[in-house]
Amino acid sequence: MKRIKYLLSNALWLTGMLFISVACSTEDNPSPSSPTDVSQGFFSDAINKLIDENYPKVMADGYAKLVIPAGLYDQSIFKIADEHKRAMDAISAAGYATYVNGGAVRDGILGTPLHDVDFSTDATPEQMKAVAIEGAEVVVVTTGGGAIAQAKHTSGEVTDMVPIRGISENLKGKSGVPADATVGTYSKNLLDDTYSRDLTINSIFWDYKTGDIIDYHGGVHDLRDKIIRTVYDANLMFPINASALIRTVRFAARYGFDIDEGTTKAIKDNMDYCDKVAPSLNNFYVTKGFTDGCGKRTYQYYVKYGIMDHFTPMLKDYIGKEAYETSLFAALDYLDEQKNDLIALGIAALFLPCIEDNIGTQEPTLENITALWDKLESESKQKDNFEMDDFSGTRTATLTIWSLYKRMTTDAILTDAEQTAAIKANERYPQALLLLNGYAKTREALKKYTAYWK
Image 1 (cartoon, rainbow, N blue to C red):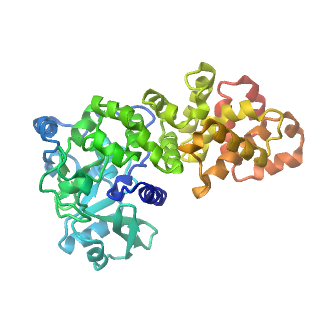
Image 2 (image 1 turned 180 degrees about the horizontal axis):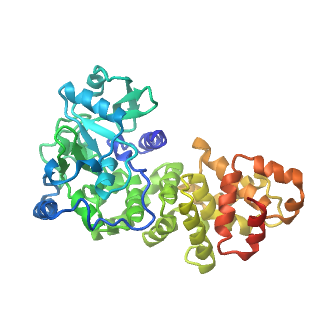
């Protein structure tokens, strides 16, 4: 969560997207490796009737409030840690509204695990700071979306408490936006807050006090029907919030959903706006998809919607080639099975064949691998809008994994006890071994190395 907020802050500084809410970053819950099945469970006949009656109004006006009463579903779908409950109880007892927002609601409805749990409230950060929360210190912090309050619990858990946002000046008077929407930092109207979010499925709220689910943009319908749409016109959103374009495709891949026709066209028409975002942020948003538990499907969606062509010109001679994709798919599937959550390993799998084809007779030292990567990035012009940085060690980790992999697949190393011990002692050895085992699924020549490195 901290990483995403840091990156959002940098992107907003660079692009002036000051209206994007930090609550949009509840994105990184694990997901199943196969397309999400929402055919049963939450979607009873009574709930489906409410959804189907409301959706035409959403399509006509851009928004229409849908309330799914607490009595129509099993509220145990929202399994929230006690620390977060204590924070919400305290804010509620102080007389403020409390709504669990975004990813936690989405994943509760889908029946997938909840991890990050944020909530929205009509209290300002300073008002929240004045509320005593048992076992927690409340502080006000500044993020890319503005100030929020955080309850820092003695257990180490942190509850993000986000004020309901007003809309951006950029959206005032636009189609699908209420004429009376509050422009500015804060609002008392939950509908206003939805315009700081990207996708309809990420803009659903659960009223913590009543248990009702509140949806203004057909997000529950879209979860049921497996559709990805933006909260408002994608042709308006993507120029303002270009990272939302990448996230749109990534979420579609995560859940195996279809992207609606209008949004699909907007992705193609607005891709160049991503070039105005920091290259390292583009890298993060694209490659994060390879840690979502559906690596192969992420790649396939990225190819289908032009993400790979636009952001990874270094791979232009590989994308679509059977020799490349057969081995890559096997490696990505293996990494998913091993529950890889390291972005560096996803990048390493994606670009390994490119490194192998260009290393030549050079010794695979970290220094040489680094120089090669820098050369390939520069020559392909990939670094202009998709560049690895070293925040949280991502760049160094990826380069180290490649160096270890290449040394581990060198015959001379197998008879050198000293070098073998040094490789195994490296903190990135476990990831290099995963990369080796993944690619060995389709490469017979690697089997002797997998037998040695265990």
